[in-house]
Image 1 (cartoon, rainbow, N blue to C red):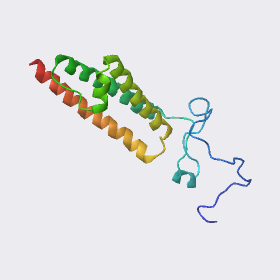
Image 2 (tube, rainbow, N blue to C red; image 1 turned 120 degrees about the horizontal axis):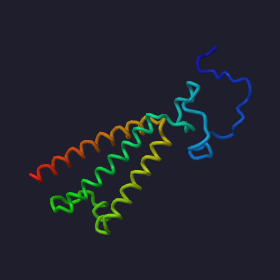
Image 3 (cartoon, helix red, strand yellow; image 1 turned 90 degrees about the horizontal axis):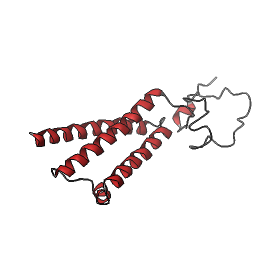
Image 4 (cartoon, rainbow, N blue to C red; image 1 turned 45 degrees about the horizontal axis):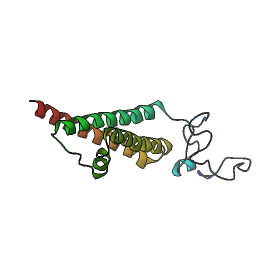
Amino acid sequence: MPENSDKRILRDRRRFPTPILCRHTFIGGRRKAARRKDDKKIYLFMDRFSSRLLVFLLLLLLLNCIDAYLTLSMIYEGSADEANPVMSFLLKHGALTFIISKFFITGFAVVFFCLFKNVKAARIGVLFLIFMYILLILYEFNMVLSIRQ
């Protein structure tokens, strides 16, 4: 029997693959990973998410909040300007607008990474963003410490 032959006896009952967003996306689903070797080669959207993914995504949100706090504190001290033109524009409309927008942009990315958790590029993207946020926060801490001395 060939290795990639399908071992199903009956014809597949589904006419279409599982959509990205359905009633099982965030609650009630049971699938964590693809079961068949051939299914692992396509993008599959699973119903359940690992606790490891939760930790990484919450870490991303936490780092985002720390970055927002440090950025605002340096700007209010007059020692720095916002380098990102989009965030600089939002900052001109107030600190609350800046914080809410920053959180929603990162929140959208978290939902995206959650939905595409089985795509290798998304998994690499989460780790890359966490790494970049850590570098940015270390740089900001260094700036804050040098200003206060």
